[in-house]
Length: 181
Image (cartoon, rainbow, N blue to C red; front, side, top):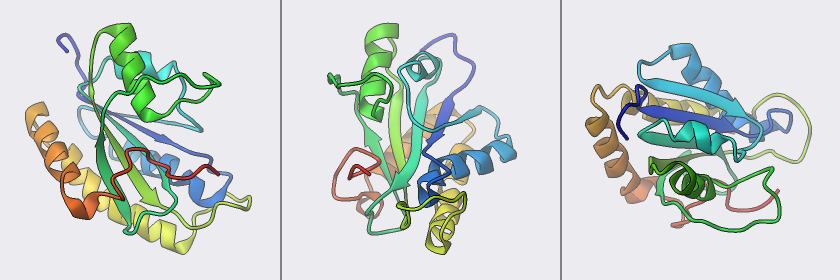
């Protein structure tokens, strides 16, 4: 991982036109406004295979998305690269994206999912439910101090420590979304 200037890539993804499915982009927007040193923030409707090339330039990649049934406000989990064949390459899950980054570019950034609990997904509209807004703020209260860690090793250790805390885990599932919509 030598030669890289940025330490953290946060990708907030989801569809802001489907109510709480926009939690990932909403988190990305809030973090981008803070302009934290060493943190690059991206936002999109879904993860794409092209994101693997960008992820290769970072030590840590955090995937932020809406979560369908997390018991708390959010879940923060370490994920491992998992190479899997899927029907389409237009959308890719975080573990597969990390595997593609590793296998194609020869680098293995640490990966984490930040799933923010949403409640309303089945209608169209570009707003978040009251509960989702509350959970978004709690997720920001958690992630901002974490991203402000000065040294990459401090950030990595803090991420690993938080991801091993049972209160931040959601049924041990490593995907940000636990059900298809």
